[in-house]
Length: 266
Image 1: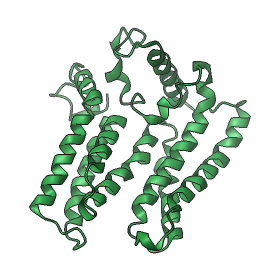
Image 2: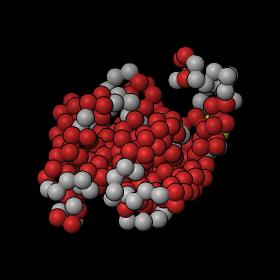
Image 3: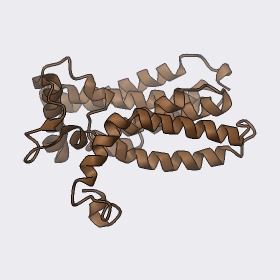
Image 4: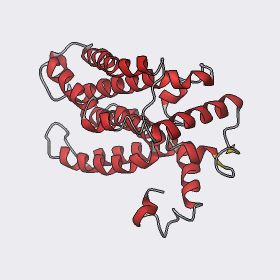
């Protein structure tokens, strides 16, 4: 169905979402004198974490943070929040004082990226470009996305998740190898915790899509998906291993407590 659409539909979705997000944030940016402040964790965690990580990366102190509690594994502590997010790395050319002024543009860019990636997925299943664009805007501006502006780092997850599905479709339908491994690595590095839920969804998605004649499912197809998934996780080990060590080294999140009560979140 992609052949019946222009090659630029996903960029239209990106541009529309970027403009809509700009309109949404602009009044608050004007009110806050060029910055974007929200409430609670956004002000006391998200912005300070960006500043701390920004200073640490630019100074080369990327293994241990002496300013986190009494000292902490820097990668393990901040990989959940921002460290491997491409959006965070866009801030590095700017001085740390610019961070509060960059939050709104970065948020708008996250909404636009979510629209772009979801459009790439939706357009595979619809005839009209406008349908794919509208679907992508509904995804990008869903209630989950709007609410989680409060938790700034949640938006990266939604922005890059559709790439898992796009890459899986490309692997099974077009036999394009390598993309799924890269999509797995990207999503695992962006946020290891949400990646667990993404894996569950993709496994269910795989077996449901196997019922489609378009996929021509076979044991060989399953093996190549499994191989690329393992390869993707291996590529993400630079982020996953320090994060796992940080979690397992915390008595509140050890293996005996990881799946019980509030320890699941702390």
